[in-house]
Length: 276
Length: 248
Image 1 (cartoon, rainbow over the protein chains, first blue to last red):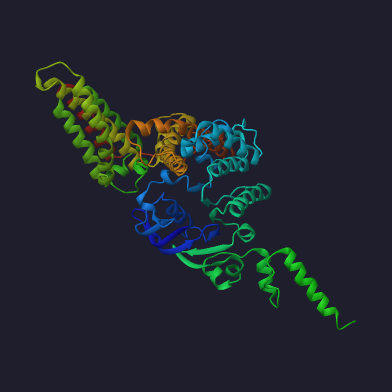
Image 2 (image 1 turned 90 degrees about the horizontal axis):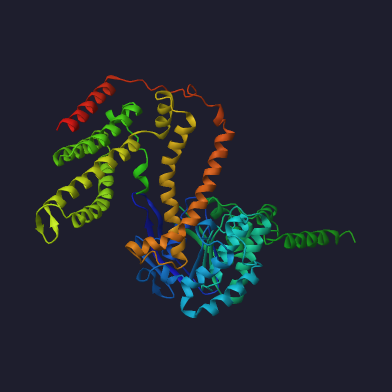
């Protein structure tokens, strides 16, 4: 469980980036923080991990105040995937990179156990282990960063724009891994994302922010159907929901191409009945 | 620390000086600091540094630079005091000669570093580059390299801070370690920093190429850098300062 209680934060000599933010994420939830640039999304996730200290308010991780422990001490519990994987990668091979994270966080478990876990993760992510991380593509490097975080099996995973700069295939690859962790191991996931299609496909809950404040918090499809809210937060809905909203008349609930096709077919069928 | 090398906009007397005059003033202060052997003269040079900062309207920045240098200065002072054996003992192994030498070393360090940082605070990097090319006839690629290197300093510092933050989130105890331990923990981070630096340099080079880097000549810049009476006055002041350092 991770919770923010009336958290506000201002960078030095600046206006507050986050104002009176309160929300709670239960174990196994998959939430997305949405909003325009400068809405306070990245500041919020950095506050959640403790990389920033709140000016006022509290961040609670499993009911314990995050201010009472150091970020490095919480690395086993909270994993943070940065937008730029090159900030995280610091070893010359993928195997060493995964081992580095494991040795840092789970050093007490013995070298043999860590080696075994590394091999397991390498297999899971389809790496041989000998690859040089900095010679890989951007998507592959992001995958290495994700693998080294997931290797330590955190209970909470924070993702700061994890799919930026990735093509569709790489994006799906990474997001599917994250979804699997969320579903199989009940890892709580909170991500900042600008790709609404990704949010619709993967997240269950959306937190909409604007001007450092939380405007709305609710299930993803419902949030995307609130045109006034999206307008206020300068967020565009996913294409299919946008189309459904424009068509109206029963099409609003179709948020995937399959659902839209079904709705269209049903309408055609309904129209063809009087002619029969 | 990051913004210590950034330009502070302004229209002060120092801001309006020709960039070459500012470089000349910096060089003369450095030269005077190394030539003189008098502690009092070094204190005077420090006062000149401070005065330049105040006239330029960057007193806060000057104080921050001074404070930043003070940390290194204290370390150097202690090293000198503890290692110098010449002179009459004053306390424990500390001698009067040791104290005097340490004071001079530390003052020299501060006096030399401050104008270098201040010149960047009161001069746009582009003006510095163009003036070097136009007035001193430095080949543009060299001037560009120098200005790019200066421009990259705050970016590298920022990048290092981001890398350390990312590693802290992975469990590396940067938030707990201090001093030499922290320094030893930073060594593995040189790899990502080096790689991102090379990537950035490559990108900058490519961007410069596509914008016609090689077409640029000494006369390409539209801005001119004439010398004024204030520049002349500054040069005279510099010469007096140098003469003072030699004579006194």
